Amino acid sequence: MTMWLRKSEKDRRLGRNTPIPTQVVSNEEYHPLPQTKDQIKVEKRINQLADKYGKKLGKSRREFFQTTGGMAVSFMAMNEVFGNFFQVDPAEAAEEDAYKELWPKDQFIFDCHTHHVRPEGTVEPLFFRKLASRFNKELEGVDPQEGDLKFRNYVKEVFLDSETSVACITGLPARTMEVIDTDEMVEARNTLNEMAGSQRMVSHGLVRPFEVDFLEQTIRQATELKVDAWKCYTGVPELGGEMAWTMDDEELIYPFYETVRRHGINKTVCVHKGLPLPGADIASAHPRDMKKAALDNPDINFVVYHSGFKAANYELPPGDGFIGEDGYLAWTTDLVRDREATPEMTNVYLDLGTTFGHIVITHPKIAGHFFGQTIRAFGADHIFFGTDSVWWGTPQWQIEALRRFQISEELQEEFGYAPITDEEKTMILGPNAAPFYGIDANEARKAIPDDALSLLKAEYRHDGVSPSNTQYGWIADNTRNT
Picture 1: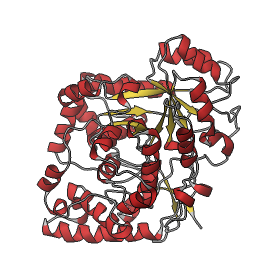
Picture 2 (picture 1 turned 90 degrees about the vertical axis):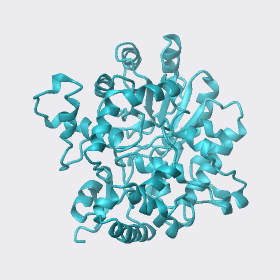
Picture 3 (picture 1 turned 90 degrees about the horizontal axis):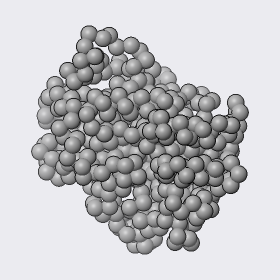
Picture 4 (picture 1 turned 180 degrees about the vertical axis):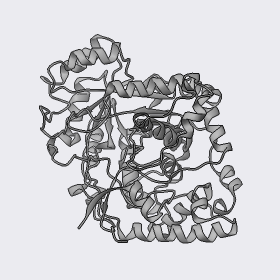
């Protein structure tokens, strides 16, 4: 029988802490998927390569996985199984200097899609409280409590174990879900920024149009909490007074657009589309409503989370099973076609959260179609980097995967896709989304190296980097006896 299990629990039980995930994880918004045959091959090959190169360096498999060489062999294994979709040099596996020489330095990384959560049963990084106390004297001598461990693990995974410069904390505007609310997200943002002494985190405000006081709450979140952007979730299950809705509902949601417009509030509105929650209204989860909403409200910036990607029947089958005629990708291609047919729909942007992590480890060919289509229709400057971490663990492997990813020549020739350039990938990784959250990427790049969080990271690295190499979402587990 297939069961739901936290990926972190399985990793601890079986010792499968590879630098990149070899199985899709669910953030509770869709059914988790069984490991495919190709993913099993990738996992096996990663372990083989780690043993080979680790032995030469006198490191155990686990120790090797915590190095840049571990990341390199992961992409080497992906290329062996899926084809040449990732730029990787075997020299990276044996020499850290080779990695430093090959890959960009000091990029501005803005992850516009993160969550924080405490993985059950995980030993939390108590060192964060100890090290942070030198920058915040109020923490000296204070024993950490279970409630505040949630945030510390997030900081370790996102800021210490990755190159993330700034992150946006987001949530689900559904009271039936066990998620943090806007006040808690803003508290996390303020706590980190105060400790860092610079802007390292921004926060969403949650939009719940099915509540009678949601316009008043909009103003409160903007004026009192000073949220940095907005998050909508149209396809919520109709439970506990909640209701599915659409972004082009003139009676229900247009008053929200008018409120942010009239009060001079941030006009960046993010909306979950695709990846329908089990029990959700499928029609409301589809991005077809974005066209009218965007055209009727040209001064609002709409960010389609997950890029509207629908995992068919809640699963992404191996091979080419998900790719339709002419490279059709359910729902995302529908949004692409709307944009191509409507040139004035320039205020719609796409977030990569979970979609990229989902497809790049299951079948990179789908990722090739995804980037080929979305860049052609929207432009690379309309794509925002998001990871849905910490469900996927540290964002670092997705940063690496995007840097290295390339659309195959085969797909370029057959479908007329342009290659994705290093410049475009650099834009997607951070500068594209930054101004929509009031961030000047160039100024942030100057301030971040000297802030307290960077000093904390330097100490962490000096004492020995120890990435968990795990993910905290749910997986389909049928290996309880493995």
